[in-house]
Length: 487
Image (cartoon, rainbow, N blue to C red; front, side):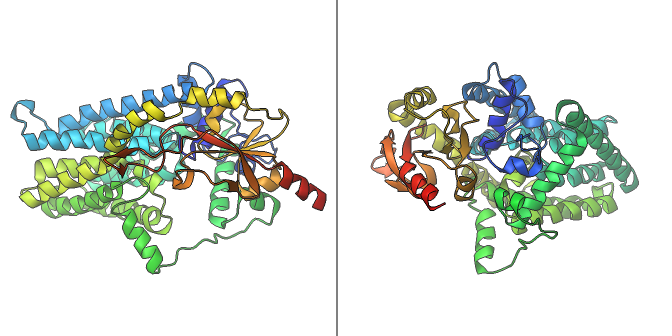
């Protein structure tokens, strides 16, 4: 699982184990919960609640099964909607349409598996369901459906929600006069707020406490302070990490919109979808029912998109809406583009964005042959002679080796001040290293269970480490003793 999965998936496991919707693996959860219990208040609760409901038992393996259910639903529903819009008549389907359709699903699978454990997993499924609106654009119940989906997205994570909201208005403006589009959008927003209120009030820790916790987290993230610094220091009254345009930031934005290191070439999908929308508007602007509504909601959506892509450079929130971005490019290429170079450029972009899927597929045989599966990693961890009372520092990807979350915490220098430890555990492949260093901060490697291998084909490395849960144990006891003596 990805590094951020420790915040959400571990909370779901705790809930399944009967410990409540809590997470004490990071001081971050103390930002939203001044009681010190680590209640899940810095984010809305729907994603860990749903994972917990889908899990047959409170283990990381069960969490994987629950996420697999969401992945499967996402791809199968996307296949149905994409097929209806890209290949409306299967008997007249061309090889080009079939290729666009197939690689669109591979692209969606690629971005889905790149962010395992994060709430965008659920949001992509909700966005896919919202795309049913394109199959029935004139139905009266659409404002209720889109409002309910918007509310569930807010109850999952507010980041992608700020972008999804104005897109509802854009959708209605395409098919209805501006005044009607604004009314329907307003109705959807009311439904969304009601859904968010009900989820937090009935299944979380309450609407007010959740809202307060989410805003505390927002101000903490924009203050540039660590959770420990934010809690113990003076909380800033203004947002401090303002964006500055320079050569470095410009190149980073350019990379995000093209090759996008976070999820290879998914940024190019977003750039292409914007270009396709401009071509579509130029071609069909006289057929758009609500021009004023389109300008209004379109500008708001673009402002939020600019904020996330350029100012905040938070791609995960934008990639949560990948089902829509992929569909825009695929639909335009299959149904509207007349120039061959545009059609094949769109196909090339979608094929490039699906590389992660095929890359993970190529790595799977190496995992089967040499990787350490989770079960063996958990058994190895259980055999370690560790003090049951000590706090164990872990990186954000190795925490599934145990459910003793009251003993573990997300290791970092600021967190180490809060949780003095004698042991930290790091997963092989962390930070792109093939072999973990012999010394980590002030700790020295004590046990090495890593493979020390690279997956290669014809002497060409596919990755820096074999996939799996191989790890190393670091002993920090001598340094901890020195720190205690200095105190």
